[in-house]
Every structure is written in structure tokens, then in C-alpha cells.
Length: 286
Image (tube, rainbow, N blue to C red; front, side, top):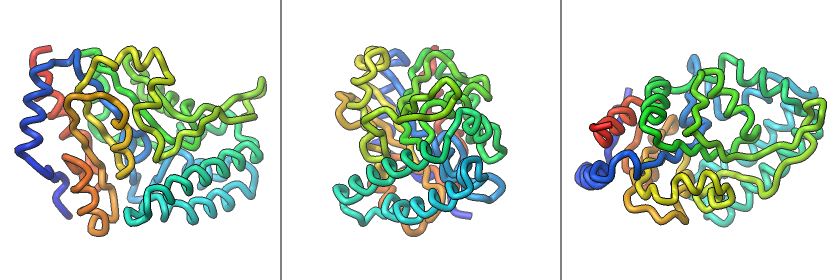
């Protein structure tokens, strides 16, 4: 088993920690991805790529939905995770993927009841330490902004948090939004579509209530599992930033790319223990 934690530049991390600690809790906010970041990437040694993967693997919709969704995943996921693909090419492919998938979901009769089945699946588990993480932020009124390109949108993320009794008022979810009819059936998706490469902090400015909470909180801890997740901090006038990456698998192939991108790497689908220790180090007096 490889080591589970890598700090790419210990001296720089310590400098940043000291700068954040001086400002206190009132100047800090957390940016986080959801799939494979707050929730585990593997459950019982089986890969769980996303909430939507549970939907198509368990065949909750029309008989042809699962195979068609997996065809799209097979075609586009290799582009998504390949660090050698140029950014412009990758961005075009990701938008194309999500557009096709949302159209497929709606045509396949996606219903809110399907989301409940996904959320209640044994495949969806938060990382160890999440409860402590959420409670710490709640107690100190530190905003947690979840920015997700989830193919199932905001609703199941909120439902997952509610299931754990952690849907606190300091947590804000920015993701894709379905429009539902009176029978709970998806009829359209709100534009613009949020996908992995456009979920930066400039999106938050379209959410005035969220933006007003964090615009003066110039210190950020960022959590993500994808190289493009660091884009969540772009467009925001921050003072200090700590980027924590979850490199869940294919470690040998991707390690050097992740080391160049993140300040801290948590390997092998590890827990939130380091994040919780970090928060306690930064916010000692509240």
C-alpha cells in the first residue's frame, strides 16, 4: 500500500497555514467537489465514479438507458481523466457529453423517485471524517460551497446531506438544476450546464446570496479529485489558497500531474482526517 498523504511543498504549506490562521474563521471558506471527493470513490472495493453511475448501473430508468449512458461514459471519461488532452479539446468534449446525457435522462423518464433510490443505495458513502468536518464548519459558521458538475444535479446532493443530518445552513450547493413537472418527472435542464471544466468561482456570482457570504472571505481551502477542480478558485480575488486533491486510483499514471496541481494529495480513497486536523490547526480559538 502506498503512503496515503503527500505534501508537495511543506515549507509553502506552512507559510500559507500561518497566513490563514492570522485571519481566523471569519475570513475562510471551503470549496469542494462532491463525487469522489466528499463521497468515497470505492465502496466494498467497487468503483463508484459518481451519483449518476449508480443510476445507470442499477437500471432505474428505461431498459436502454443504462447501456446508452455507459457508451457515453466509455467515450468521454477517457478524455476527462487524460491530463495530456488539450484543455480546449477537453472542454468541448465535456460539454458535449453532459448535453447528450441530460437529453438521454429526460427522454428516459427521470423522476425524483429515481433520485431517492440512488441516495439510499449502499454504494453512496461519505468519506470517513465527513461528519466531524461538517460539524466543525457549522459550529464556526464557515461556508462550505459544493460546486458539482453532477449529472443528477442539486437534488440528490442535498438528499445525501439530509440523509446524514448534515444539510446545514452554512452549506451551499451549486450544480445542475432540473425542472420537474407536477408528477416529479424531469422535463428540462437549466442553462448553462455546469460541467467539470467550467465550475469556477465566477459561477458563484450568479448566486448573489452565496457570493455575498464569501466575497470578503479571501482564504480558501479547496477539495477536489480532478485536476480541473482547481478551476473552482479561478476568478475569485483570494489571498491564500490550500488545494487538497484526492487521487483515488491510477496513482502511478497520474501522480506527477497531481503533484504539480495540488498542495496536498490524499491517496487511495483516504479519509478526511488530514483536512480535519488542518482545520483545527487553522482555527484554534473558536
